[in-house]
Length: 274
Image (cartoon, rainbow, N blue to C red; front, side):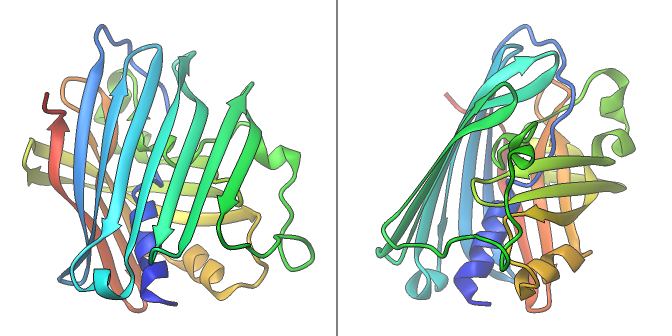
């Protein structure tokens, strides 16, 4: 698998999290996270995202790019935006957009719209045509696969309510449906441990969750990369609470592969600076 493919997997793993029940918020919360993405000891990328939410709505805006020596061989940049509402203490995405540019040649964007808890519109634009994902080579995406799903970016918000926020098993032991515009998959989280973590803006604990990728539809049958991701038991997501509220977001990601370990470690985690 090429380095740039690994880079995209590492960056977008930041977006593989969860959603639950939201506490009542009296004020708008604005949070910022800055990640350094590394392969072994070498920094290969950076990722940043801002979260803004209250008891009625949420919005996430972020970006990522390759850095260092990798930039010479596999230059790429990406940006994302997701927004939605809070209804009955749950996240309900309304719109989602991701744009990726590689080597100043390939550009692609995915735009999703949601209505009644389901995907209502999909727009995929690319300056290079992609292979059609049709049977029998691919598992077909059906209408049922786009109902009651989350976009990958909305899952960066992990709200909990009451005493559940004090339990690592409550936060982690969940399974979440995700649709990214082409593929439908589940993310299964299971609690492993609670560990201290310190970075600029935060000094506290994080819940360490084992993360598993479960393909559902849209993927190529018997594809090596899909099989490797589904079989990978060496993926972790660390969730920490945002300041002043019982709402969690990723503070660290670890993805082990047969080629080595990718990590997304925090450079800053805390309230957004004005």
